[in-house]
Length: 364
Image 1 (tube, one colour):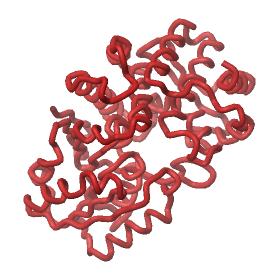
Image 2: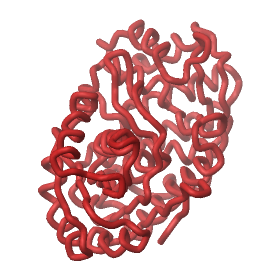
Image 3: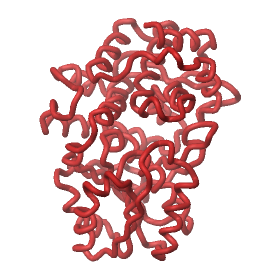
Image 4: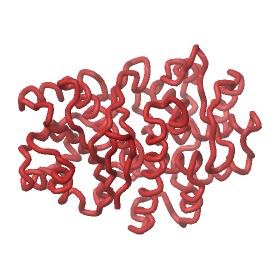
C-alpha cells in the first residue's frame, strides 16, 4: 500500500508494507538512492531491527554504518545531534549519502534535523518503529530538537525521500507507547476524518496492540497517514490549515515542558491537551457537550490519562503556553473542535477560559 505526499519536486511515497524492513534495500534503490547510509537509532530499537535493516540495505549494495543514540525525549537536544554530526564526519557522508531514522519520533526528529543541516542537506528516509511516529512524526518534514524553554523550538522543515512503515515492528512496542500513538490517531478523527473516529468507536477494545486485527490496524494506519499527507500536501509550512494538526498540542506541549518530559509521554500529554481543548470549545460554544463526551470516551477506551496529576503547577503550564511556536504577537493560538471530523483555529480564547480548562483537568 502506498500513499503520496504531493509536494511537486519534493513529493515522496509513504509505504505501508508488512515485512517492509526486509524490502528496504530494493525500495530505496527503486527511488534512486545509492552509496553510503547512516542508520540513526537507539539501543533497544537497533537490537530488535538493526540487523534486518542493515542486511537488506547491504544486499542492495549500500555501504551501511550506524549511529546509536540514547533513548528518550530528554535527549532530544543539540548536544545529541552533535553526535550524529560526528558520525557523519567519521564515515565521510556526502551529499548523495542518506541518513535513515530507525526509531520513534525523537529519533526521526533528530535524524531529520541532522540531515537538513549536514552539508546543507543530504538524503533522509524515515523508518518509524512506534505507532506515534508512523501516523504523525515521520510524515510532513518537521524536524528539530527541544530547548529548555520549550519543545521543538529549534528545527527546520525538511522532507524525507520516503517513509517506510512496517506494521510488524509494532509487536515489540511497549503498551504505553502504543497508547501514546493512539492519541494522534484519535486526533485525526476529531479534526478531519469522522470515518476513522467511528471505526475506533466500533472496536470492542483499543487499549493494546494485540486487540487489533491486521486489517483494522492497516485501516487505522492508512486513514491516519492519508489525512496527514493530504493536509501537508496543501500546506507544507503551516501557513494555514496544517495548524489543525496541532490539536491538543498547545496545552500538551506545555504539560511536557513543565514536567521535563518525564511524567507523561507525548501522546499522554496530547490526550490531556485534547480534553482541555474540547472543554474550551464547549465553554465557548464551538462544540456540543455530546461531541466532547464522545472524545473523552474514546480516550478512556485507549486507557490514556484524562486527568492531570494534582501536583502539577497550572501557572507554570499557562506560562509555558506563551513559549509555544504557535504564539503570535503574544496571543496563544488554539485548535478547537467544532464537531467530530471538523476543527478550526482561534486566538480568541480568554485567559480565564484557559485557566478553567486546566483546572478541570485536575478536578474532573
